[in-house]
Length: 246
Length: 180
Image (cartoon, rainbow over all chains, first blue to last red; front, side):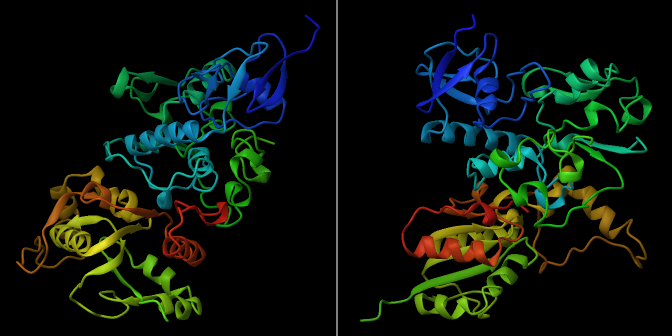
C-alpha cells in the first residue's frame, strides 16, 4: 500500500492515500474545488452538490467520491461551471439572500463561491419563503432566511460540542433547520459562541451579536482574495476576517 | 465618418437611485461615454417620454403598478434591457417586505407608526397601487443582461458598458463583482 497512487484532475496528476476522497486529495495537492457543505474537519456530507466533478465521464460529488488510481477527473470545465452556477442560483432563490442587508456579506462563502463561478443573476423565480429570525440568545442570532441546509452546525454541535443544539426537520422542499428545544429558541439551549457550531456556518445564518460590520467594505475576507485563494471562512482565523477561533 | 451614437435610456423603479449615483461616479468617463451614446429618457435628462432605444438600463425592482408599466414600456422600446443593481436582480432591500402581507406593511407604516396624526392608509388614485410582493425584473419581462452590485461600482459599470458596446460577453473582474 506504500506505492504512490494517483488520478488526474484537469490533466494534472494528483496523488492520494487510501480512503481519501477526490476533494481531500485535491486539497492536499493545493487544488481548489468549489464547495459549501464540505469542511475538512468533518465527515463528507455530499448535500450541497457544488463540488460536482466529472469522474471517468460521470458527474459525482468530489467530497463523497473515493479517489481511485487512474481516475480521470474534470473540474474546471464550462459544463461543470454552468452546473455549479445553476445549483448556486437555486440556493439563492430558495432562501432570502439579501446581501446588502447581511452582516456576513464579504465573508460569506455562499457569496464567494457564487463570485468564483461568475454568477451574475439568480435566473430562477424567487421563492421568497417566510422564515423567522431568532434573536433570543444573548450572544448570537440565527437567521433562518439564509440557511442552505449544509448541516455543518448540526454536525459541529453534535460531534464536536456534544450539545446537539441543531437538527434538520422535514423532507425535500419542506426540510428546514430547527433548534432542539421545546420552544425551538436558541436562547433556551446551552449554545455558546465559543462552540464549534458558531464557527462553521458558510452563510449569514448564525451570526455573533455586537460584532456586525467590523471590517469595512473593501477589507473583508473575500474583498481581498477570492475563495480559491483565501479558503473557507470556517478555516480562516477571526483575526484575518474568518470565523475560526484563534 | 463618425458612427451614429446609440440611444440609451435609464430609469429607477423600486430602487434608491444609488445605481444612478454610481453612473455619475463615472466622472470624466461620462464624456467618453457620450461619444458613443446619447441619452433618451433618464433621470439625468429629465426626458419623460421613452423613444425607441438601443439600450435600456433599469435600476430597482418591481414594487407597484407603475413600475410594471414603465418596465414593460422599456422592454417594448429597448433592443437590449439591462437589470442594474441588487434590487433589479433579486428585489434587494425593498424585497425584505416580502416577509409580510401587504396589509401588515401598510398598517405598520400608516396606522401603527410613530407620531401619526389622523392615521389612514393612503388611497389617492394618483398613488400607484403596491404589488403583493416586490419582484426582480426578470420575473416580469425578459432581461438581456445583469449587472450586480449595491450599487455596482463605477468601474464595474464602465467595464460592463465597454463590453456591451464592443459586443463582447459580459465578464467582470473579481474586484468588480459584488452582490452588495
